[in-house]
Length: 174
Image (cartoon, rainbow, N blue to C red; front, side, top):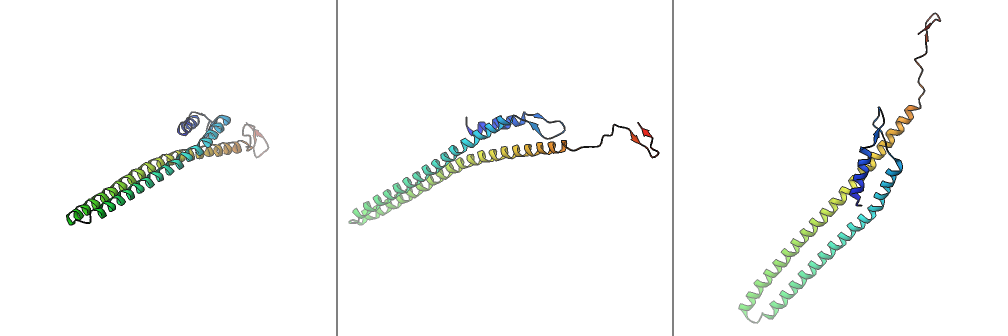
């Protein structure tokens, strides 16, 4: 089960929990909720490893693009040097080298933008997962705090107003 599904399941459990009368608290099965949170905790390291792997893959793609660009530039330079003998050939070689360099730089820029967009999308997704996890944890803690407040208030001894009260002359009034 993916972490998103588990978080949705935990949210649903909290939303569908029986409400405690006259309170913002609800009653949930503690063992089920804790088991769900443990599942989320176990899945987070795997998602973090996947994000690290994506970053490493992106860096490898960038390195390959730079290497290919350097090879194209080196090839263009070699070609230019071979054609130096003839002025017309030299002029043509310089134009071609410029075109190849511009093409390689444009390709490297395009690849860099694609890689950045891909990484940004993955990081945004990961950020969303973390945000949902933090919100679920905060809601859980808020519910626990609310339950504790209700328990503390339920332990206060209040005077019993049902018994008769005595008047000023010592007589009992109903």
